[in-house]
Length: 120
Image (cartoon, rainbow, N blue to C red; front, side, top):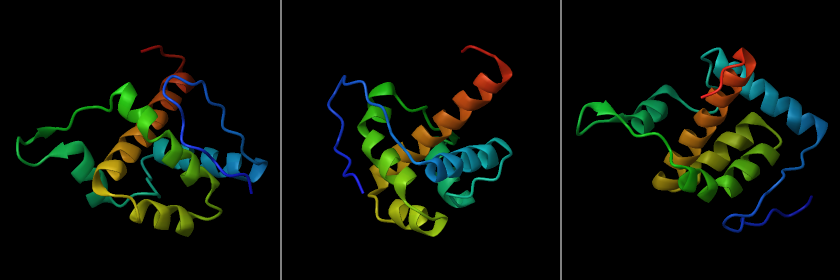
């Protein structure tokens, strides 16, 4: 298996995946669009998107933070099973996990907009 390298700041990066990996990504995004977030439990999503201290929704992910976890999104994609994807997520530190979750949901949101033909 090809080893992935951490991205360089500002570098345009293309992720190459197998047909099976692509189908898994399509499945995960499709499930998330339907509200079935199979990678994350409900409490984890709540922690990431709800600021307990202020009682307000947490901020969206910045472009810089999204790029900072690109490597982890790639590693997540290449995990062969849902169990291994979850195990990969479980080993991330809290800050990285939060950024990965926000980036993942940003990808899902962009897929919804693309499907509906809406530009935001």
